[in-house]
Image 1 (spheres, rainbow, N blue to C red):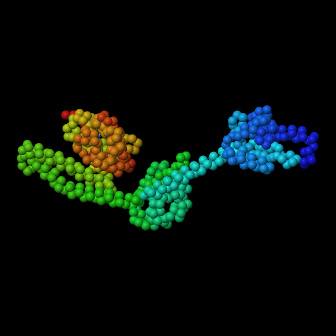
Image 2 (image 1 turned 180 degrees about the vertical axis):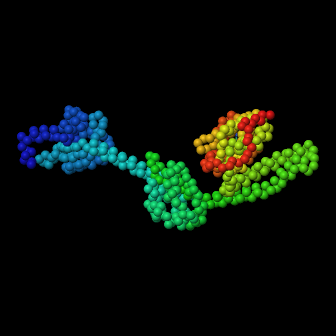
Image 3 (image 1 turned 90 degrees about the vertical axis):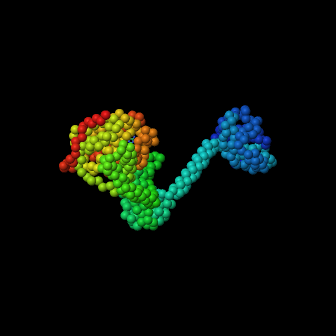
Length: 522
Ligand code: ADP
């Protein structure tokens, strides 16, 4: 080999090959001053040969490597060894590039180092790709840490809730439970994850008093289209509890269904308190009703003159007693109704009823009350008979409450308009008033028990705040519904829908036909 190199005729082709090589090649003297460089080097560094020859290699330093790195390089090559490594260098335009290189000392015939030759390869693209990959890995790691943190926080929150939670996948498999679930049903998460309802059936048959179709509930949740679904069940084992099951569809951020979340809430104590409260109210109301009936009876007798003549002052006093006892009687009756409805103890006495006739009777009964405020009652009760099945007493109570409210919450001289018409297989009754209306805030609470508006005009009127709750419950027991629209200071419309009787009409109840239009303006 050395013989070949020593041949003078080979020198020129060799130099020209080095000149055109794809690797950059630089030859420096012992001080690192550039003596020669090939085309690849000038192209990569951006310097011309004239600019670079005579310059120090330091001209290429980027400053991104520690001085000790260069010290190691120099001590290696000056001791006659080859140095191999990577350098980050700087081009003429200031941009940086990576090089992989070997620097070899050139020795003369006496073994003295005369020059160094560096053969370098541009590895910038590879290094950039490596850096991009490292950056991606670092970001992924960060995201993984964030997801893990969120997951463990969610788990901790779920485990801290007192409700038992169970997530069932779309293919009916148990996916996830919290620690309250394990505790409620004496199960361990690892025992049930991946199982389906069928495998869990023997366990749930032991747990619940009446084997409940948890899977049926699952189907119901889907049928409900994601609307919440609730049901109460009795648990027998390992503890006797009353549980409220609440189901909701769970979706991910792409709106894809993950399954159904079952929430089991222990309502044992809550229901017991409710039961005791309702029993107490019912007991007290019963006890109050008897003496009250007697007071009202005797006052009526006295006012009717059955126990002798009374002076004007005595009549005035007794009328105050009567007004207040009537109010008390209404409150007691309303309270009794509430507790009966809540206990499911209201039995409807089903009869065939013409709703229009019933409304006419109610308006007749309220005539004095309406006259006292000089209000016009306009009825447009449709010409056709509106026959439904219902309880006369209970529906009279409903329409009395709604029409009486229209009277109470409408100033003197206002108008109450009652219209009825058939809508499909239902009868629709609208009771419209020109009264004080209902504020937006009050509208949300209107059908809740004991709600009475704080509006001073409404507050000055006597009432229990139970009428609408009772009316709504009774209408729903008839398979109907009640709703309203209202504009404050303009008036309200209460709308009642009741299903028309479907079966052949038997003999309608005999009632007095009310006037189609009753005007009570005094
Ligand atoms: P009560 O009339 O005995 O207070 P209700 O349950 O019948 O009880 O009504 C509850 C509340 O709803 C009333 O106190 C009143 O504030 C409001 N309300 C009911 N009907 C009307 C109406 N037609 N116009 C305005 N407010 C009404």
